Image (tube, rainbow, N blue to C red; front, side, top):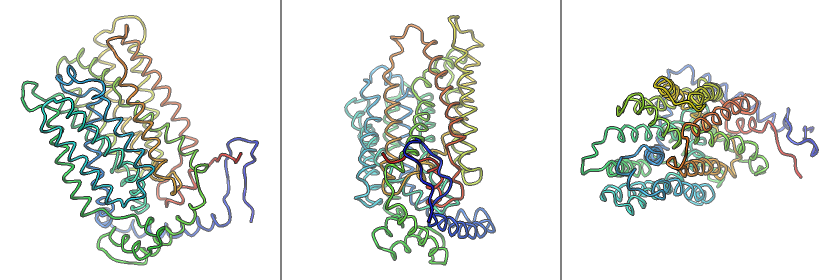
Length: 496
């Protein structure tokens, strides 16, 4: 048996062929995949969606938790109430990110000790409790701090188990939609809801915007708790790894409608068993190339919607349209539409086309936006108007660019260390948001120059990310998890 091996002296290598065993895995999986695809394509789209609906339902509780997290992210970066702008401390503003990092550490490194259902019930309880604490206290900073910490902890704790589970629960031809709709779409909905609330809330009302956020989070937390109890299903891959084949077959039968054990069920069991066996020998060395790529992608995601972006929107919108909330609503709506449309197209267009399209256009728009603020001249009305519309269109394509990131996170890493590898890019994303929130614009002599530097840098990074993704981000549409894993190992790090 001959296998191409990289030389220790050559750095990164492309590995053109796999071992004979891996080639057999590919050929067998390809035949099964083609058969399943032919059967699925002969069924009407609605029938396929209904048949696979339990797979999305199984992560529905996490989606609701991420929706509340989106509201807190938007509040933290500046889409908050006037009272909050005047009264809250920096600790209250960034505490959600700190809680999310703590939760991600716990969820990434210790969540496999507990059943997924138990984890989601606990996260739902945290969301519910945090919402109640915020709802019953009107601008009590201690209550606001506690509620936001609990919500951040719930979101961080849920992210790694959910994306790992969503990839293992889904059939391969629906995995892109299931994973992205479980994380990216609800987070963006939450951001949009918070933006609308921040611009439409009556500041004279005794019921504050933060209390509404608490009530909304409490309601969604209660619904998530119910969904976690009724609809959560353990991963058939986990059950196979524990030696419970009958439990895995039962879980697979529950993941489709009507509930039944068919020949396709046994094919999935065979695929999952091969996946488990193959990944027993894989570790951090195999995960590192994908970890670097996806960490960079999630950092770009944080930069695309940060406090400086919210500040730029407020500046240009006020200069052009005064106190109108229209540009804010359109800003959130375009981001939502980019994420929404792409989430439901990832299994038809694939992951790579939206990623490349979004990165190159949003990078160009960011550079164009920065050029409006460059130089020492005073900004004219037309400069502000052009900058505002470039920023709005930029959000649409940023939503398109980063919708595939959830799918990539669920597919890229060896199973044994998948959850820590999902947690690390998420933690880096939170660190970037937290650091940007430390910027004090009142202490900056020229805000326009600062904005220009930020968007020129962001545009350059996005365009560099586009070029990097052309070569190093694989297309994983219509592949099994094992085949997707092979695609992410196009280059490896040789042993020392």
